[in-house]
Structures are given as C-alpha cells and as structure tokens.
Image 1: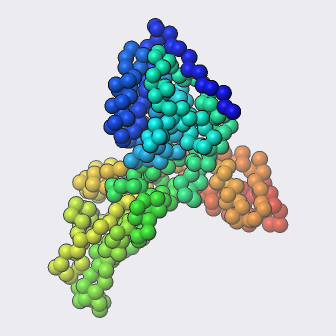
Image 2: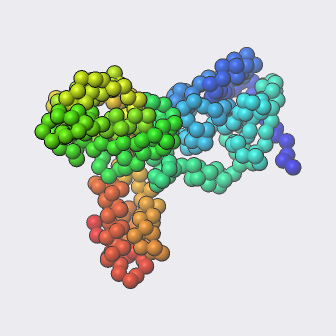
Image 3: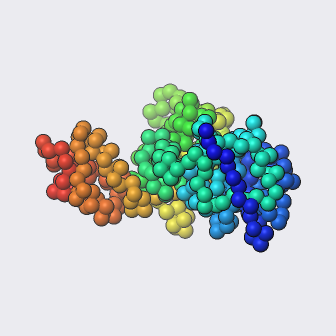
Length: 394
C-alpha cells in the first residue's frame, strides 16, 4: 500500500508558487483560477503544448507545479513530459485526468498514485516541494521512460538537440501546416519528413518525393505539374504530375533551395491557391496536399543573391525545423555507430579506442559520413568481430 502524501505548508513570507495549468479545457483553467488565488498561488494557463513551453521558458528560474491535461491539441503527453523534465527539472509535474477529476503523480502509469484535484486545491496554504521526486517515481525510472519515448519512428538519437526536433515534428504532424526542414547534408532531413507524414492523419495517403536538384530543369516543371498530350515533343499522352499524385497525402520537396527561379513563382501560386495546371492545358485541378520542404542551402543568402524568392521562403517557412549537425549531437555517435556496425556485420562490436577516434572527428558529412566510415570498417576488419582503430578510416 502506498503511504499517504503529505504536502508541506509554505511559509507566509515566500512568494506565490506558480501553477502552470496546461489544458485546452477552459473549464479546468477557470476553476483553477478561481480556487488557487494569490498570495499563495499564481495560476498561469496554457491551452496548447507550444504556448505552455513558451510560458515555462518565461518563468524558467522560478519553482512551480505543472498540471498537465494529456489531451493536448499539438503534442503527445509523453513527449511534453520529457521536454519538461529535461528543460525544467525544478518543476513538479502532475498529470491531470480531466475525465475523472484526478491527478496522476508523475505519469499516467497505472501504478502511479492518484489524488483528486479537489484534495489539492482545498489545502489552504499548501505547497509542493519543487525538489521532491514524485511518489512512485525514481531517477532511474524516469531515465528509462525518457529513453523509451525519445525516438521518432525509426530515427536514432537520444540527445537533447534531437529531442527538440522530435517534439517539433510531433507538434506539427497533426496539422496541415507547411514545414521547412533545414540542415546540413547528411543530417536526415528526408527521414524527418517521412515521420511527419507517418504520424499525421494523412499517413494512409501517398507520400510523394520530388528531389528538386536531381531532376533536370527542363523536366522539373512537367514532373511537378504534369502535361497534356501534345504539350511538347514526345508528349504522346497526358500525364498527371507529382503534385496531383500526392492528393490527400504529403508532397516532399527535397532540396527546394535548388529549384530554378523561374519555377518558384508557379510553386508559390500552387501553395497559395491549392491548384495545379498541366503543361499545355487550360483546366485547373484542385489538390489537397500537405507540403514539407527541405534544403541544405542557406536560403537567406540565396534570397540576398536573388536566387530564391522571398515570398516563397516565407510561404514555406510557416513551421521551420532545423536538424542539428552530428557535431552538435555527439552523444548520439556511440548508439549510431553500434547500430551501423550491427547492420553491416552481425555480431560485431566497437572497441573503446575506435569509439574515441569517432568522438574526436568533426563529421562534416554528418550521419551519412559516419555510416560510410562504419561500413568501410566492417570490410577492413576481415574475419574479426571487433572494430579497432586501424579499421577506422576518416
């Protein structure tokens, strides 16, 4: 049986404790505002994950309690909890079950202790210690849970920079907002785009990829918009473009920074009006497409050089996500290297000395470069099963 929870009485001369009420339910927020009043409490409301994180950032140096409604409109509760624990360890987190009027201490696990909301708000002058560990939780348990929920699909990485990327991807996935993914070559922009589609409501519909740098400029327009029979030499029959093929799903415009300037105005028109017109045709076709774009180019520099339209940039960058280079997420190198080693040579292991070499490298080619280095090592190790320093060629 779990022992009862005691809430220490706060001294009269202490400043009010912040209560962050994170819920889209206005009734819950209103009730808290009415019952938890100054001078003991200061209720700060946030109806969504994004707005709540901004409120927490503003009050980052202050102690407080987070009352979390798990039914947030823009982020999963587990992901939000992970962000709060990593960024704001001084806050105590209580998960609210809005249907039963209970608070689940620390998590929504069935083994967690629950107490009614009324039992907390009716304790006059009571306060929760910001340094205490929630009942039923432990530091090791929190670490394991954080690791389990850190990833996004099949993307590997548990570092803080990648956790921020996962959080942003989950926030935007459920909406039709246009996303611009930026980052150096080899950071995995295409994987993030795929996962945004996979966890969205469009996941059962097409995910269509257009690599703007791989298709010749003379063919890119017809690939995107399609064409009618006789539109140009060789157009022996009408063809649907890739934008139209993505109807109901997601269109991924990879390397958008390399799109020819002349074609950018047509893409802008499509984004603004949701219509496409085939080459050689006069009919406009309405399409329901969610657009995710990616680039490793510095678009601000391209705009200054008049190689990229400013209006297109701001139409694409409604929700920007920057992928960190591998040198900014060194904590992920070991797990990535082990994963690649197992993929290229089953049963192989990475020596401590080889790992040390990997950790000293700057990785200008990012994860793609690391993958190539491990694949090369798997070949050089011959019949051995341990990757040693002599097998690591940078």
